Length: 566
Image (cartoon, rainbow, N blue to C red; front, side, top):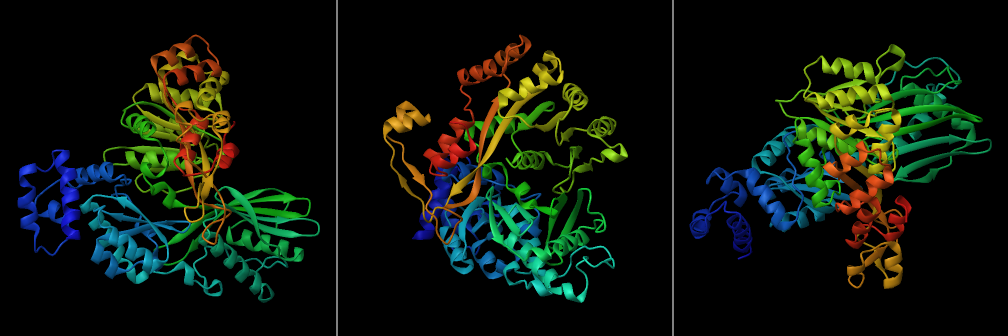
């Protein structure tokens, strides 16, 4: 009976969208009876229905995000929790972990038994992502082919860790390479593994006069995780520099490098490493370059429906400029890479200029900026325009020369994506004007602007209601017509989270440059004039978008106050 009810739910949704004729529902159910295959696969293989249309319809019906797996990097699939029996039984594939939440791809949103059994077997909370049947099958086959190389990161022993790409270690008292330094090697390996397991984005190794601390940045917040003896700080810095292929004898100037940590034949993690001479030794900061973030799909980033529509429509245009703005660590790169993944098809030539290239994307020509060698953003852009491009991504517009070339590309039949460091969408336009870009060029080339922040997501296991009066809610900026209906939550903290939060969600201001906004730019209006017009046209600013996230229970008002202005 349960399976029959699930089939009815699916067929009802497809019938309402005219994909399945109402008169055919009983015939389909009768014909499926006795078939030894999942129902969605039966519809696609036996009835020749369009799998992508089915997935999109069911995504809208049941409210689950939709993702295409055509370009998904299967090495991101958690290797230690792959279970061939469960995958084949439920036609469900664990895709990636976010903190302690496991995202599972399925083509049938009614098969909730699959999520429960996967959660029971893995110990992780599960979230469903819808995908089309053919894409799911291709991805499952590829993952299971690589299963012989699987390795569970939770079972890795730091002493046995191998695959670090290191240069030949030099003879130096502080090199961290001799027999006496074996404990340091093991300790650093353990620190790197702990950072990956805990979902940290950055690691800080900080020497002081009488102390030495190591901190992780988790969900945007730094927290101390260890205080090794201060006498070991130079040896740890030397070991990290050896692993990063940096000059261990040079301690007077900053250096930048990378580490590739191979967890198995198919799985590796990249770290970007930066050293900085300080009063008491070299501070080392490592950024974990998480390629899974680029594969999330736009539905996973936190855009409101209207905001997502504006972004995807701009991506569909053959020309124009999409600008993403926000402070460092606000998720700009993920937003750009998500757009590039949507655009990354065989028919398009895509080139990017980045400083640095953080995540490698198959099928996209990525250029690492090297100012010392003369490979600057402007020179890279000029070369791109001679390479028959369709889409160009500029890591950051920092000066007038870069801005002028990017705008020229947007005006001559190319789609250009880039970032700026400003606080809001309206300030982005005036920033371009202040750089010296003529107002008519700004008005005619920029298509949309996305300003964004990242807020910590409340832990669903321990969050509790927060009681505020209607007066307090109104003071915070909540809509007057919804004050009596608003239910807010606040952080508590439990074993499953960090201080009541687990993961992050994006908060966005997405502005489409309308004729009226273009007129304000042409007339020399300032950012306040532009922001006022954006409100008139119904675009939510960052604060308003954040309050929506709080009303939906995704985050707390305290967190919104932290990341946006009141």
